[in-house]
Amino acid sequence: MAWIQGYATPATITRVLRDAMVAAGWTEVANPAAEEYILQTTTDPEGAIRAPKAVKAALTGAAASGTGFTGGATYDYVVTAEGPKGESVASATASVTQPTTPERVKLSWRLLDGALRYHIYRKTGTGGFERVGSTEGQCTTWIDDGATPQAGVTPPAGQSLTILARIRRPSASKFAIEVSMLEAYDTVAATATNESPKVPLYFWYGGATTPSWGDNSQLLYWGNVSKNRVAVVIYGDPTIDFSNYRVGFLYLGRLTPFPEAGQDVAGNFALCGNFAGSGTLSVPTTYGPYTGSGVLDVMVYKTKSGVLYQRHELAFVTQRSGMTLEDKGFNPSQWTQKYHLSPAYVVHGYDGYRGWLEDVLVVQDHNLVHLDEFIVSYPDGGTERYKYFRVDPAGNWPIGNASPNSKYSVAILKEAA
Image 1 (cartoon, rainbow, N blue to C red):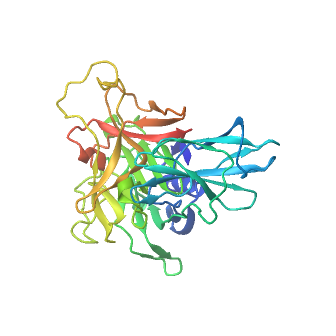
Image 2: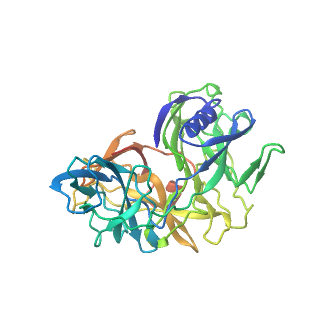
Image 3: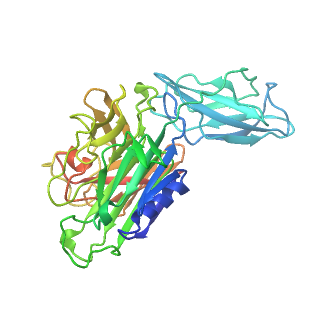
């Protein structure tokens, strides 16, 4: 995961996004035209539930009674979660080096919603990970007393998705870029296989005639980019004309699936942007009457039955538009005194809930300032920092269309520990 922010122009923003994506693990497949890039990614493997985070391993000072340790050796640990539909892939690795007289090792990790139990795997040297124990229920600590590994019991390899994206500036537009998904690209014939409808991302009003706005006008961008997804906000310079000040939010990437859904990788990639152009938005029907637009809805690569680029809706926790909020403060819950940030759930009319946008939260725009930051604290001492953006594209975008209360915007994960 890499946080990006800086300045660009309508003429350079596609290159900026291309560079950020390549730095995060995407591969440039082709550059078919000026300010147009075809990029490919293979997502990190996933299992039937997301892997645990914040895994730590520490010596306890108490002598180990088992025979599984050798003094002076370094041991690597990973943890998996078991959900209702199966096991996750391995977590990030935590390591300890045993003293001459081996000691017990305490493993800990962050509680994972939907996990029924956890499994612990260990290796040393060039060997592979093998299971050394499991928890009883949802306990998030485990002591390795020198357990003997279960030969041949290894973490699931998981499944990855390989997919391509096209990022382009249409007809030297001063107002927007376009993004689409595709399954393959022939660099010789310059043809795409099963390309989605192109989703616009407007950073300036498409009908504006302000002479000061052009190819070299100022854009500001912020976002979170990895090989699994791109979540960025782009602002047009408001100093030229406040009435035409526009901002766009782009999400291109996988969804975090619900544990009850099991492994959902093959079609799990979403795209949405916004429309602030002149005229009426053209709703595509390329893949049937329920083809997604990525503007009025969220477009997802495949339904669970394999249908391409269908319309999915956003859902999130919201207040009624007529509710009276406090004039001061951040309107916390009267029960917990904490501010509520909702995931952006993605729902299909037949498949049901597919998951939620990864590393994106929906926030009520009440007594907040653009670029405020929220800190999410966990019992293990870990934190996540989200940056808030006042996104109001004055046009169509999925979050604005999903709520009876228009005063909702987004926060994007900036730091995790």
